[in-house]
Image (cartoon, rainbow, N blue to C red; front, side, top):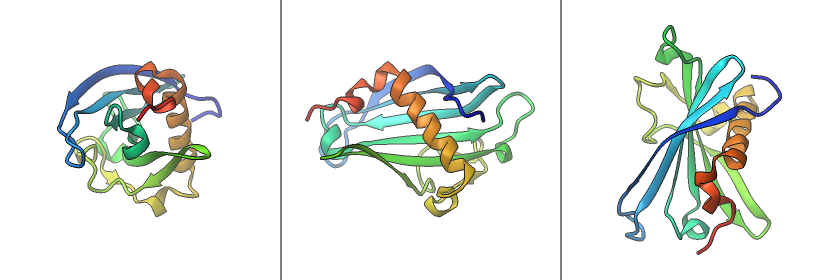
Length: 147
């Protein structure tokens, strides 16, 4: 991946639920992160509308090679949590194992926090999250939350 941010291609969204914690509907949006070389990642962002300050949001990524010749072994699942603090929004890498996007037909490896931190995967994951944050208008509530 280059030093520039990937472009974002929003592709779908759904509302489902209820959230087991608060009973409110949950929203999920997804799409692809594109580089000049093609698709680099699929992304999923999930949150409870109106409760971002309480619950935060989950950013789940499947990073690696895509296309007709690519196989799940070419990709890894990475997860980050968003929380709003008194200093503003904060992202933290979390273990991807057990998250809904860790389907082995998509990514052969679900990376732990320790496997991501300090690696080039960490830099790439944060660049993709930055691009989503700045470019996908569907996550506007996460950028400026209410409730």
